[in-house]
Structures are given as structure tokens and as C-alpha cells.
Image (cartoon, rainbow, N blue to C red; front, top):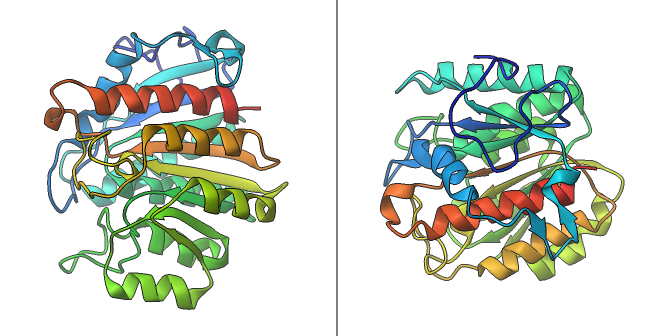
Length: 290
């Protein structure tokens, strides 16, 4: 499936009917083939779309309306079940086509490994790209149980591709000792436990740079987002994550693409995780697309 093919399923609220006049392509990556604990994030994109219908189209935070941004929900990439290598290749090709059309890619996961092929595609267009990573987990392993393709390895792969000095991680509160040692010794920027205050300090170093941003919903405390695969107590509030999104929006950083991943709706019968994710996506659309 190409992003410019007709999509007849559920779409994110107020999506444009066609891709031609859209500045943003919103797309889903229904993949959870490598998760280490609870699967189910492949159902995240569709549930986010469904609950988005309960959103207000106006953001009082940014004083903007979704009518101010032209975006097209292209549906989900039809990834081959259980095949991470082919899925990664398909995601990279898909995002490359979005970039070739000069459009902003905004992805919904799916597990966090999906971010790796996206950044590979982004790096081809923006060789100087920096990477903002908001997450509970370091995701800096070289392998997990002998597998290098794992949702615990994407940030390590990205650091090795773009240079660790261009990787900025926030909210990290879980990982192997070796992952934290790598972060400390490699020159990457890791802020443990908190997001907003360290982000305020880091953003000036990213002024006028092209930046890709990934948000793992498990950066939120389980009280705010129980519907995810690998819960970690001690997280931030949804209010703090919104503030972080708005900080980036108000900065001189050039966000050139983004994703939000790891929503697993089957573990959250009241949909608070998907509802939070849909609101974050609204603010990302309104704040980051220039």
C-alpha cells in the first residue's frame, strides 16, 4: 500500500479526504512482532483513530484549530505478520515516498522498533538530523535474547547511524546498566526520570536544526497510560508530556517528522491511554507542523 492510495477505513478526526493538498501524512505501523512482554500495540493506531472522534478540534493550549493543518490519514501500512525484517524495509520505503513528496510524516505505532526504519529514511534526506526520544526505556541494547531486531534496540541503532551526540533522550527510568553506561560514555544526551526541565535546557542546543521526535506512550506513569506493553512505575503525568510537546512547538527547532508508539489498547478497557495518545497527536499536528 502506498500513502497516496485510497483508504476507506476509520481516520483521525478531520483528516483531509485526499493526500494531494495535505502537508502531513498520518499513517499507522501495526507491528508488535518483537515485544518482550505484552503484545498488542499493533492495534494501537486504529484505536487512536477511533477515540480521536471524541476530541475537540480546537486546542486552547496553542489557540489553533485542526482546520489550520492540512493532514491526510493514509491508514496502516499492511505489514507482514511476524516478519520484522521485511516490515522494517517496508516502513523505510513508505516513509521515503512521503519525504519524496515533500510531506511531513507522522507515524503511529506499533512497537518502538518501527522508529528505526523511519529515522533511516529521514537521515537520507536530512544527513544532519538530530533525534529527540521521550520514553521510559533507554532502548539502547545491541540485542535482546540474541535478536538485534527488537523494540529494545532502536535508539542504539539510531545513535550509531546519526552519531550519539545527536541523540537526546528524556524521561528514561528503565534499562540495563550497560545501556546507561553507553549513554554516559558515548556522548549522547540522556535525562533520567524527568522530561520538561531537562528539555528546556537542551532545546537551545537544537535551535535551527532538523529534528525527528519519537514519543513512547510508556513515558507516562501507568496511572495515566495503563494500555501499553511494558509498564514502568514512576513516570510523568499527561500534563507534563503536553508541556513538553508545547515546549518543542515554541522553540526554534525544525521538527521534520515524528511518531507516537506503544499504545496497546487491549490492556486499557476505558481507553484512557488511546485518548491521551490522540490528544498528544492533536497537539503535535498543531504545534510541530510549520
